[in-house]
Length: 152
Image 1 (spheres, helix red, strand yellow):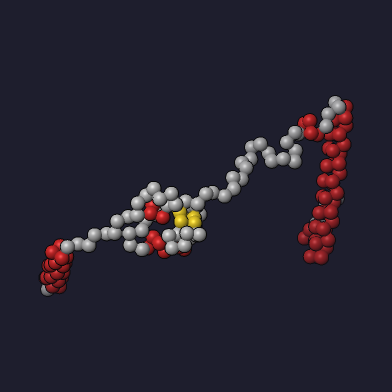
Image 2 (cartoon, helix red, strand yellow):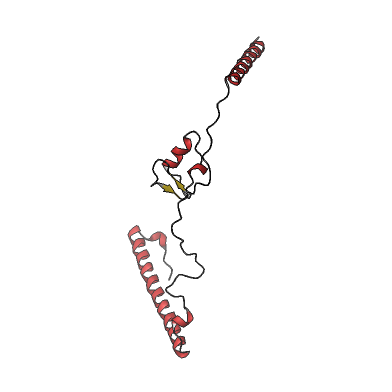
């Protein structure tokens, strides 16, 4: 017997859905019970138990990777040695702040201390600074002259 869903009211449709879900759960439970009885009969006739068939039952499956746990810290905050970081995941605020300071690198924050702190950047000599400044001024003048010629 086919039901014409277009003629049903929303209330009737909802009741139909609920009845169908209940019937589906009952049918599934009956199917599971049937399969369970067949398995028990087969095991009894062969004098075996479930543990004989599935020895890893209740334990982690052999194919799954076990959780490894925590990782040893790799970096230490020089201003507060109690703060450490393993190098995995998001950088802690103290690590990012330390890297912004002059002469500090990630290697200099390593716990084992195998890497030396980076040497501070050498400042350019006054003569080199004067040359750079003069070059910038000249480039600016040339740029203004070419812009004036193009405009004319």
